[in-house]
Length: 220
Image (cartoon, rainbow, N blue to C red; front, side, top):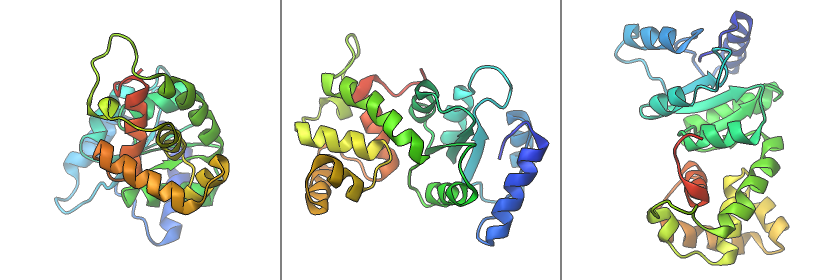
C-alpha cells in the first residue's frame, strides 16, 4: 500500500493482518518507496492488490501512477475525496476500485478482497454519484472529435446502456433490477448481451467500457 501518513499505513496493515486472509507485502510512503520495495521483494512475493492513496503527495491526484501500476497489478484507490472527477479519473486510469477513507473497516476489507479476486469495488455512497456522471453523457454517445473504439461502436439498446451504466456505478444485479423495474433474471440477460456485444468479461471491464463510451479511457 502507498500512503504518506505513517499512522494510516500502520492502521491499514493492522486491519488487513487481523483478517488472517490478507498479507501486506509492503507499506510505503511514496511511489518511489513502493518501487524500491517491489524490487527488493522475494521473487515469490505477490503484489495482487496495490492500495493507493490518490493524493499521497499532497498535490494533484496521482493518476499517472495509477495507470503505471495498473499495468502489472490491480489498483484499489483509497482517498478522502469523493469528487466525481477523482473517481472517474482513477477508473479511467485503470483502477479496479475506489473507496473513500470514510468507509468502515468491513467495507475496506471487502473492497481489497473483491479487487484481489478480479472484481470491481466502489464505496456505496459513490455509486449514485458515478451513475449520475455516466447516465446522461453515456446515453448521448461518444464525445465529438474522438474516434470510436470497439466499445463505443457496439450497438446497445437503451435498456442495455442503462444496465451497463448502473452496473459500472457499483450496483448489484438485484439493485439494478429494482431501479429499472424489471426482474433480476432480465438484468442478467442484459448483462450477458452487453458482454457478448462488447466482448468483455468482469465488472472492472464493464466499468471501463461504460467510461469509454462516455468519451475515452485516458486520465482526465
